[in-house]
Length: 486
Image (cartoon, rainbow, N blue to C red):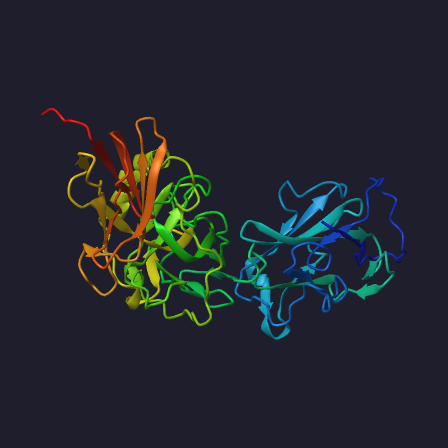
């Protein structure tokens, strides 16, 4: 972090005559120059201190006019430091009541007045002004009290900053819309009370609607941040984001909703929120009617389908996929090894999907949930064999494994078991030693059926895996030119 050196000389009104030097009551520990951390000094690029504490940051490279976020509930606190190499690990010297930290919409900033004579400052110490939202530190600035005068002076520039009557320092700061986000191009943040409300990202491609009376007991404020996730090289719904092998065919977009305090695991909302996300799949695509919004969380190790709900707060015009996010694509290796991990978690995932009533995308591009984490669109199919999984040939006829993909639910109310077309299914043939001897990729037809024909297999026993980017796979055994004794 690039740090901009400042020393703000805070002068406390005194009954004695003023002099621009310290009262020699105690030795001052040596320390480096005082510092400030904000968007104008290499800190959070979406947080800025404002005059009179610092020069006006308008014109700084990261200052974005019109991007002010006045929907947060920041906390301003002062901590006391013996030296500037210390941090604020101990209790705060002073925390301003929330009612005193107010938003000034006309000036696009927050403000609180620090009455420095309310709690006496020690001229042998330093004081750090910190601004936080929830548990996240946005920025800080160090001040240096002097035992004389009624003004602030920037020691580096010599600029004199008068105090307001009553030895009051106005602390003004600006929080822009991406201050709590990793993805600054598509995100949004807001603090909610039990009155509820709606938050959408700056693109309006994603959002969340919190109903009234949704906060759990003991929680009076909930700060939500929603931002788009870059899915390059990984699945949105991989619960550990590394190697879980999501069983679902996924479609962009993918968004992460974080909350402070956290709402996952044993903590959840009392009333379900509506999460809305645009999807990068044309409505004319046959797969569109089978899409379902899902939630995953790496700490809970779950993938959960959400009951559908309208999300009228979205505007999906111009939305497009950033990356293709087929979870099982380009994994490599023997499918049985990859799918063995999926099988271990399969029954748990199935139990999450099965009991929930699923509705339609044409009901709205949203889903209901009481927990907040990663959200993305996926195709929750089932795959089943057509006919027997034990195949035989005398060597003159081909081996023909067939599978059918069925949608677990479609959005226009069509019942379970509707065929899913145009899904690629890969058939891979392994010999006794698990060497790949043949493979073929076939798309499902209008009946959701995919079949592959293998006519050049030599005499022997084989294992055939039919694998689709969907929930489950099918294993066939094949004997060619082998006499089976009953």
